[in-house]
Amino acid sequence: MPTKNITLAAALLLYLPVQAQVNSTAELLPGIDHSYKPMTLKLDDKGQKFIRLITWHQMWVTHTQNNPGTLDVNGKPLNSTTDVAIRRSRFLVQAQVSPRFMIISHWGINNQSFINGGSAGTLGSGASATGQGGKRPQLYMHDAWTEYAVKPGKFHLGAGLHYWNGVSRLSSQSTLTFMTLDAPIFNWYNIETTDQFARQLGIYAKGQLGKLDYRVHLNKPFAFGASPSAVNSANAVNVLNENWSTGGYLNYMFWDKESNVLPFFAGTYFGSKKVFTIGAGWYSQKGVTASRKSPTDSVQEHNQSNLGVDVFLDMPVNKKKGTAVSVYSVFYKYNFGPNYLRNIGILNLHANTQPVSAKPDASWAGGGNLQPTIGTGSIWYTQAGYLLPKLKNGTAFMPYAAFTYKNFDRIGKASGQFDLGMNYLLSGHNAKITLQYSSRPVYKNINGNPERNGSKGELVLQTHIFL
Image (cartoon, rainbow, N blue to C red; front, side, top):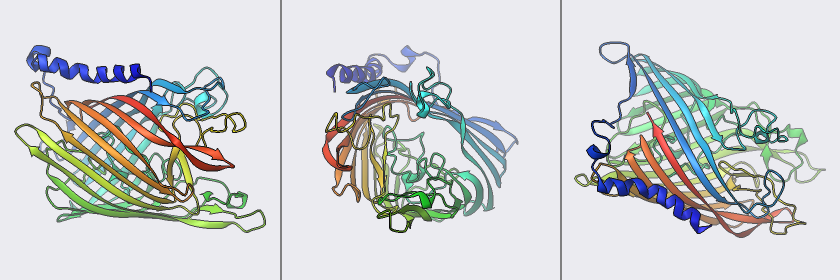
């Protein structure tokens, strides 16, 4: 990666805290209150009926070392790519009609770049270029569900397009409170196959029984894939079906209790809570994939089974100095059928690669930042961060690191990759700047099979603000 890109990104991240050491908050912005106050419209005097609006933007500046053989928009080799993109732009409305009735509406866009996120017929949709690129992405619903408190706090029932997922804490992660730059993506085991950006239509139950927090669901997943009769692959691929899915996640809260009014688990509390939880969960659906060993064999259907166990620790270290520690670790055991594997790249700008005949080490996963992400096998993921003492103006740094161990059946050999990052917290999760470098494994194509071919990296600078 060019040194000038690293230097520029580091300079951008460090500029504000350097200024903060020189000046006090009053000198920088006299008379301005930066504390967060939720946008809430009260509908009664007691505050039991209300409408709350949340909005947020996450903007990325990326520099990516592309996979070998990557081609640009004109079909020419491209070693690296730099872009400015919208990772998320969202609106969420929580309407508490009464103490027992709640409505959630959540909509927005994701992953708009100069090439992705465009309307039908543009380069971003995979069709030929029309000059529009990533223009005019379509707003769509992320959540649309209603809930009734049968026994407030202990037993709630809801239905709709929801995010009350099973398997792990990270599978229902809040995108507003990441400790790292983003989620590792494999935590959303169905992402954009049988779900709608980690949501499915269904019925759920949730509540807290003492220190035990639970959520379970019965969903009707979206139809996705090919007709089973059309499958000609020895490796499992998604097929159309009408089967229901079940899922759930239970976690025990040893110290402070966490809120479960909304499904979004916090990534870190920056020491404002003392939290230690252990959890486990599952997701299952019949007939999700199919395979055919040879053209003369019959098609075999396969069930999907996802299991997870995790542990989360987030606690203050020195309240006076404002220091805190946050650690999360999860182990996944995924089964989608024999050798099932998906290559995914967040905000991937160039999916095409040169043929092996032209470039022998051309990427097996595809161009840009595509990598093996979700598949049959096991994944272990761990992240840890430390909140440093607050600066004079109340802002703070939080360095962190994450490590991922993947062992997919399709590849046959395990791989490791890491993330290194730094948060600069201007106002907690409400306003922060994050710089992260991530590595990923690269594979070349050997007669249609993957063979390890080193690693590539990506540097991302994010501005995150939510109100």
